[in-house]
Length: 293
Length: 293
Image 1 (cartoon, rainbow over the protein chains, first blue to last red):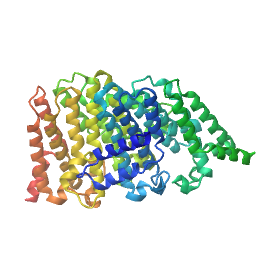
Image 2: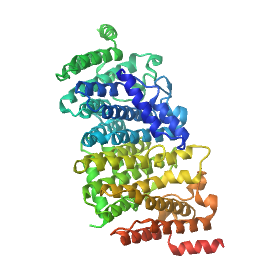
Image 3: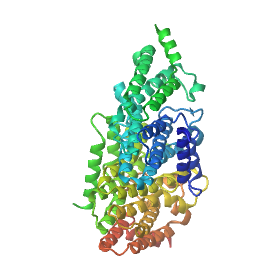
């Protein structure tokens, strides 16, 4: 089973286990809508890839960690799309949750996804309870206050914010949690894996800023031009397009170099390069730098 | 230290640990506003009282469980008060979180409180990792889909709902989780404690329905008449005031009888009776039944 199929299988099992026929049916539908069809599943793929590189001796715990990370990411998308934030009508090429099910079920669906993420890890804890507790702490720090993705979104509610602090929390925190969690699920020391997650998270955020300016909304599956319209801090508005593209390329190289020596090193390097090509193709990078020159 | 002081001390420590000077300051302020000043803290008091009755041999784990329960309850209040739900301007006698900090920080503050609840238990796990995992599962079931308080709130988004299913999820689930968690934190079998939580939760919900009709908003610290205004299922609108009062009295008696034999049995019985008097005083019960006759 390839990594994406493994993750989707684990997510399907989680949703089936946590939505019952005698629970509120529209909440169950809203939760499913938030998780399927998925996006690139880059965060859980990263978690599984790191776990594999570290031996993956407790695959059920790895599956729980990867699924939990994706559920937390989906919850953040559902809440970020709400009318009081981005007011986005589409997401992943379909209606956003609040557009399809209303604002109330979007709030509650996001809440339920956060809870379900931690529940998955608690339910997988029997095989290695201390690892599970470490994982729950790592994911909570990647999501909550003061440095996780919720804090990142909250920086948009402040009058002053440093771009790096904002983006490190809004995007970097969950990428870093994904690489740390991969190692922790496999019982390996996690600190050497932090830099990979942080570099990739920042690369992803810079790519997102670039795509917000240059992408086709149909290809992106969500509206473009939102950073500018909402006055959000953005690499492109602060540094210009060419400097942002060069920053993206630099971060991808640093991510590749940050992968610690391990038996899965080559596979991970290939994954990082493949993902960077999906985010902003090298040919487009060259075009954008040439145009700006 | 009495139970309320113990709980407030644990909550203060949790908030201090999870809000840092270099995190977003308004998010930290919104989180604190949601938790202090507190209400009756009945759910965490119940958790600590049950843990004490079971020996409380790991008080740090009990504190984490009780704090987590209160944080989850506070999160539900913040989200339930949002404009898309109750649109309540006041809560616990002060401005609701969205009235004071805006809708975005109310959404994010609630999210951060949910995450923090699970983080507290993960951080207290080292002394008894399997107990912590059990606790996280119990609290997640009490809060999430398909039977927890989030599901209870989601029943308000359905066209058809049974009053018992709605109230069991909306209020009963977290009360049951509180008694179960008290036993689990102390390493005792939790099943015998479920009935106490369920009876008290239902009594609390019936009392809430009664108070929504008869209470003074200043004394209640939140608006009255909301169930009727919002067309929500309610004991009083379904069964009338006198039958609701009799149901409340019956549930309090059943809660007292549900307390398993243990060294703290008398203290717990006293707590239940004291709390029921705070909810709907016996003298008022007699008046309401007499008026309806």
